Image (cartoon, rainbow, N blue to C red; front, side):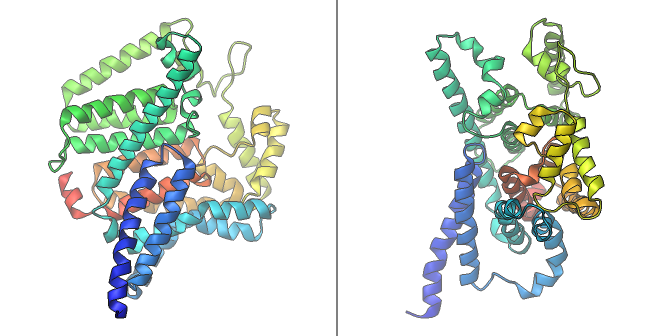
Length: 419
C-alpha cells in the first residue's frame, strides 16, 4: 500500500468524524456543557489530523496574508495567555487557559480553512434548532413531572416557580446563554422562510418558530428578549411586512399593559420593576446592583490601569470591592463583571480594553462584508449579550464565539445571493 493510498483511506473517516462532531457540537449547545465540550474536542482533534494528513495544516501562501485577522480575532486567547505571565492567581490563570484554548483552533480553522465549512453551515444550524427544541421539550417535561408530583395545576408551568433559572437550569445550562442559542436558532428559522432551497414546509417552520419563541419568553432572559423584539421590529419594518408588524405591535402592547396593570405579577417585577438601576432599594423592591458591580470592577482597573492584575487576577480584588460595597450576593457567588468590556478593563487594563475594541471592530467589519442579514443578527445578539455577560470567560461563550467566527468567515456566495 502506497503512502498516498493510506492517506486517502485515513482522510475520509477523519473528515466524516470532523463533520458529525461539528454538527453534534451545535446540537448540544443548549443541552449540556459536558457534551458540547466533548464533541468540540473530538472535532478540533479530528479536523487537525485531517489537515495534517493532507498537508494543509499550514498554508504558507496565505499564512502571512491572513495573519493579522487571525491574531485580532484570537485576542481573547492571546490576552489570557499573556495575562497569565504576570497573574497574581497562577492556578486560576492555568484553568482559564484550558477553558479558552479551543478558541485558538476555531479561529485558525475559520481563517485559513473556511472553505471546508461553507457547505456545512446550514446543516449545522438545523442541528442547533433541533438541540433548542429538545432543550425546550426536556425542560418543560421535567417541570411537568415536578408539577404532577406536587399535584399542582398545569397552568403553573408558566409561573415564576417554573420560569427563568428554574426552567433553564433543569438541564444545567445558564439562562442567558441558552437564550442566546435560541435567538440564533430563531434567526435561522426566519432565514429559512426566505430560502428557496429549503425543503422544510412553512407550517412546520412556523411551528418551530412559535415553540422557540414561547420557550424564550418563558426563560425571561431580558437581554435576549430585547434582541428578539428590537431586531424583529427592524426586520418587519425593512421587509415592509405591515400586517405582521401591526400584529407584532398589538401583541407586545397588550402584554405590556397586562403586565403593568396586574397587581401581583412576577412578569411585571422581572421586566419593569426589576430594571431599577436608578432607584434605591426599599423593603418592597430589590435594587438592581448592576452599575455598582461594574463600578467594583472599575475600581480594580484604577489599581492596575495599564495591564491589569492579569488572567484570573481581578477576582480577588473585585471581591474586596464587593465586601466594601456590602454586596453579599456578589461576594459569596464570586460574580464576574457581567460585562465583557468591563471584564477585560479590570483584568487587562487599558491594553485589554483597546484590544477588545479592535476585536469587536474587526468582528463587525467581517460581518458587514458578507452582506448577510442573518450574520448581522447573530453578531448583533452576541455584542448585545456582552453588555450584561462576561461571555468570553465562560465555556459556553467561548464555544459560541468560535462558531460565530466560523459562520462569518465561511458564509459562501450561495448563501449571500439568497439574501
